[in-house]
Amino acid sequence: MNYNILSYLIGEGFKNVLKNKKSTFAALIIMFATMITVGIGLAGAQNITSVIKQLENDVPVIVFVKDGLSTSELDQIEDYIKSIEYVNNVSFTSKADALKNAKEKLADNADLLEKYSENNHPFKASYSITLTDINKSKEVIDVINASETIKESIEEIQTSDTVINGLNKADKGVKIAFFSIGALLIVVSTVIIGNTIKLTVHARRREISIMKYVGATNNFIRAPFVVEGIVIGIVATAVSILSLGGLYTLIYSKFNSVLLSNFKFELLQFSDIFQIAIIVYAILGIGIGVFGSVLSMKKYLKV
Image 1 (cartoon, rainbow, N blue to C red):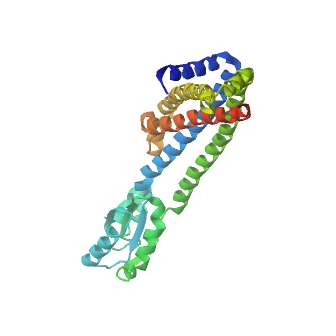
Image 2: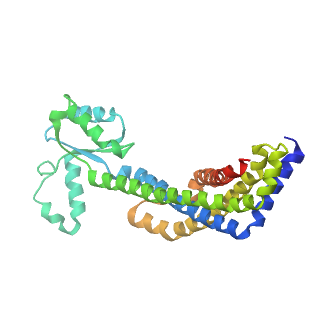
Image 3: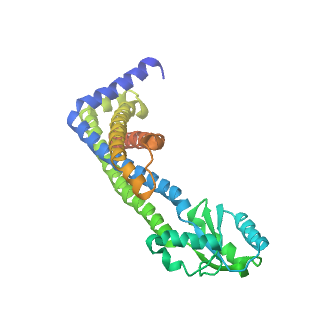
């Protein structure tokens, strides 16, 4: 395809966009709503995944060991736990430190524990295990329980399954909710863009018939309308990414410091999700535009 033909097809596509201003505007609005919804869902899912990662060190698996174990036995337990897949870090709390920690937690009521000595109290020595993936806590616990070497030395294993399950459910819930709405809006956007382009195609149906009779290929006739869909998609993508960036930055500035101070985790910055957002938006915008254009042309190319 030479330069003159290419410039003609692109020029015709841009003219089509300007001819039906009301329909084009309606298509842009619905595509904008689609992309913002998908963008918010994407940002929410990315942040929940980030929070889960940040909380991995705060949701440890605690392995309590029996009293009276020797140093070599304790070292053996620690070495075994460190060798397990998905284990990130292991920290040991001695029986004496367990009593000290209990007193610190009780604060003003610490005198309730004064009757206990360093080695004569109900608190157990323990290993705090952080994981590379908190979803693997059950697998790690199963491996510990299956060990003939150390299982007789273990008193109890505790894990925050409620917290882990809650985080995972929240992650799945956000993804399903926003992407279900997004999928519905994608269908609506495709139909509206298809109808927008249909108006232009219908107005030029005689011209298209003549072009077909003189030998123009379907692709040559279709190209300007595909360009029209792409232009609408690109404009919607640009407006959406700017709007999402502004909205996200506003939310970040208002809530990040509060979340960090109260819950010890922070939101991702917009720069952290910009790359995936622009890729999703570009695919979504151009894809809807092209698909809507192709659908709207079908019956008019049958001459």
